[in-house]
Length: 90
Image 1 (cartoon, one colour):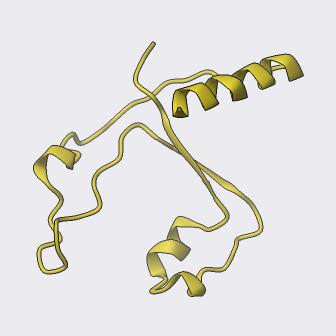
Image 2 (image 1 turned 120 degrees about the vertical axis):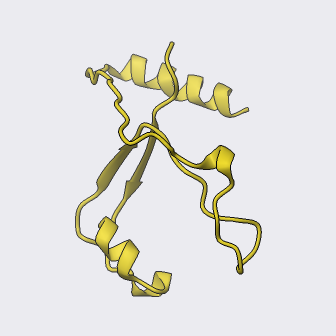
């Protein structure tokens, strides 16, 4: 099995999140955005006056690639996947 794929769902556009100063400023776009990430960098440093991301959390490559397959599943497979996800979180 390969590396885990990082995913998230958001009702906000990336531009809306980037342009807002406070979460109260965010306006739902009316659709959900499914973000698929091959990798994710750290948020910043240890304090507010040096917001540098630690080197071990920086993404230094200029490009990344990820492949995955989507396939439909029946109700029994979906229940099994939910159970497996719960086991992985425990």
